[in-house]
Length: 347
Ligand SMILES: Cc1ncc(COP(=O)(O)O)c(C=O)c1O
Image (cartoon, rainbow, N blue to C red; front, side, top):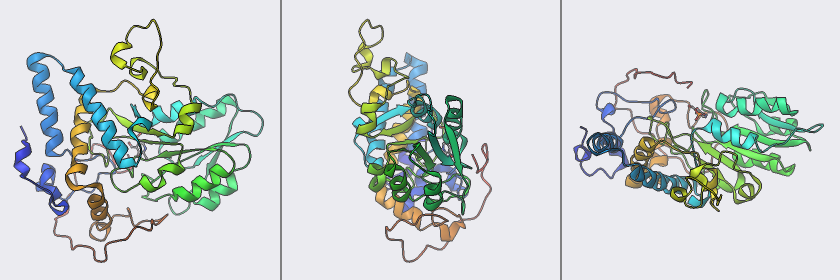
């Protein structure tokens, strides 16, 4: 078993490698595909499986872990935990939003990126079957250019969907500019945050989006998967129907198993999916890394890396946030290695 104490008391982010055993042997730059397991994640999984094996599965513990994870994710998003739904996947969150749109009437359309990751693409493409024109904006420099988005948006636009950072290119979207174009015509703003949440801050822009969904297996570092997070603005919570409602959507989930009444949660948890308890335990542990260092220290460290790694992200194409950059990038002391690639870097 990988013990927590093997890392000692690491509090300086420049020592973060000590929390991730895989980095003993090599530098790892494939978090955009899948994040590494921290010692905390490994220990939490081992403990949970051991207890499950010896005494039976403690699902109440899994539920409690999910609530802690919801609070930790909300804090990273700069949102209130009551505005976060627990989701199975980004595509499930997009499907929930797509399901809110009724039959498309003449001229109604949705605007999406031409080469978006499919979880933020197929749910919108399927709206063509409901009568919407699906307008695909060609990428420029690897992502969405706000002026190009504006050329595709008109009074019939119901939704604009895009990734905060593109998986394939590292292009960073200008959330304020694209949101302004969408909101000008009253369209919903859907952001896929999978490639930004945990790596860089979205807190300053969260009020500019209606829905932001993120998976857990990248910069939130639980590649075991099974739990994601979906910010829903208070405004859309009032408008949306929780079409996936089950016991987790109840005001008191554990008292909502068999009806006969239906009392749904008054918070965004009425949009919750039933989640993997294993994943919840893993996420609670993986998110503890952000408490260890503080998100600001992690984001600052990330901004200093591209000079070393040759990576295109986050100093790549697209929007440049105004937050200060480190004046000097660190030299690169690590040897290069090709990590195991169960997924390609385009995953
Ligand atoms: C931008 C982006 N969105 C979403 C996902 C995952 O989507 P889902 O949770 O639907 O599997 C990925 C990668 O796995 C991704 O790179």
